[in-house]
Amino acid sequence: MTNYPASPYQTPPAKPTSTLALASLILGILGWTVIPGVGSIAAIVTGHLAKSEIKNSTGALGGEGMATAGLALGYANIVLGLCVLCVVFVLPLMGIGLWSWSSLQGG
Image 1 (cartoon, rainbow, N blue to C red):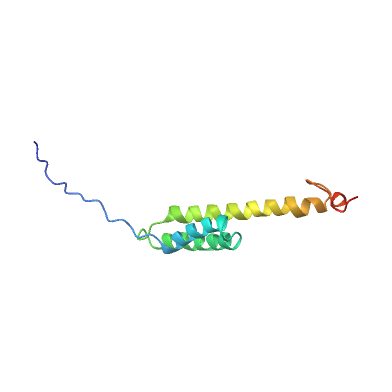
Image 2 (cartoon, rainbow, N blue to C red):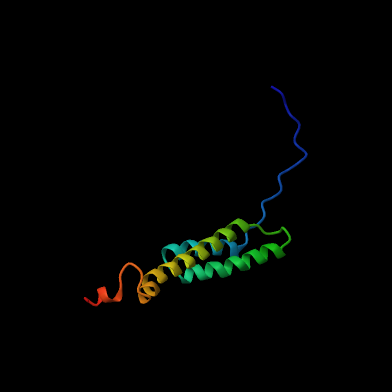
């Protein structure tokens, strides 16, 4: 059995994760499940704050991927919500869509 010498290089310790990045990810998930709208807006705000915090830490903080995921979840939920609002409310007012006001009034 061969004994190898110990490596002079050690892996660097893991960077601490930004709390705001974790909050953004959690709020983004909650925005799709429990608190739509409010959770999405909070995910967007905390995601941008986390990105700024990570950038200003000059490498001392991690979690940029979590912040990006929270931002993506938040923005996607807002965009989807606006699309649903357009289909349900705005398009029928213009006379186009899945139904018209005359069919809803029985005429």
